[in-house]
Image (cartoon, rainbow, N blue to C red; front, side, top):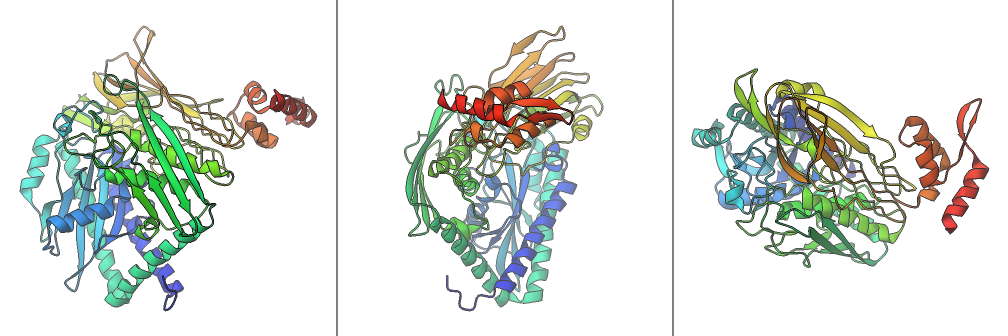
Length: 590
């Protein structure tokens, strides 16, 4: 871009105002939705897209949600070339631009003086979308028909600001919790209409010409910042692989993921090649174009030490090659993409981010914990308190984040596709919305991947029905292949799950399971943890001491893993510097 005529102050002010609109959308949806997965865990995102389908602003939206928003806006315009003020559209089509069928997206074209200037986008993960089983994660679905979800390819749901009742009734007739879904739908529509109102006010203040100039300048500025960030990287070609756990009988050997990354600082470009990956698989683990792009961008932004706006301007500097009909790329209808936002996507984010660690400090990150396990399960059954069926997803777990060149892994990381941007459930809200009782939730010492900067620790939880049986469905990963450390860092712990009978006996559960949990029985989950960055012997002994004092590490494990010796004085536990130096020298040599 040319700097001629670029008004930095005006651009910064308006950019912050637009971000403020997205945050108001977010607050509206958070406060008014009905599903616990939305109003407690915040598994949703809001964004603003330009009329020519470039992502303009997403504030703190989840990367796996917002990177495809511009693809959905493009699909909306292709399907409805005569857009009108007062229109709204519902889209959850994974074969065009959506993340997966569970993410219901509302798109509202925003008009000013009769001209389409923006598209307001809200996307929320629903508790139920009519799948053939009561979960929005159907790992075993061989195709979209077995998956069972209602697919809406940018279908008009409002005209002249009024609901199109046929579509609403279709959803209410098929979805297991119709009133809950309708409350979430109204919340999404409300958030998008808030954006419409605020964007009109913004244009009224600055004028159409000024706002159009801002949009060009903001996206061009973002592209320039991304180009400069890449120019600061060393030229390199990076290769990395990852592997999803086996899933019997669909993926008996698991699924290998490969990525080739060419960093071209002289061109200000990163070229990512995913074309060597496997074709679509006959289960619900296939990625979509949107989640493939989101995984690549998420991995890159995690790995490079630069502050760059996350919008279509920055995306211009990353070229991605992917195949049609690939499990890591664009899906071919009717292959199921039920888990497109999580399992393989999480492995790809890790694969891309960890690849940059091959450049050495300060680049790259270790692998973050994977696995939508027991703490992310979808629960369903009959609630005797209301006499009504319930379906809701838990988001109560933690999963350890990756160590980086700058910091330890985030404790409440979630999974790589979330990277700490979702909330953890309120225990009280979960127990109000669902007839369950939590037995315990706790972090587990000595579990984070060791390193100069360690990974976030594992998390353990357990819950039981209050009175009646409940069905627990989860599609985990990470019980076999742990999160890898980088640059000499240690790998994280793997995930586990057990079913505890009323007499206390335990049965180990597989990665992916459907369990009918009866009164007196308890389901236990043990999260994976994050990998470490750098050699554990390079960790500052003062940080190791702090870890011991705070309970993140036991003294024995700290000595064994980090080579730090302790002594007790009148002031309490302290580091024995001389003994530590001797032990570390011994560990380093053999």
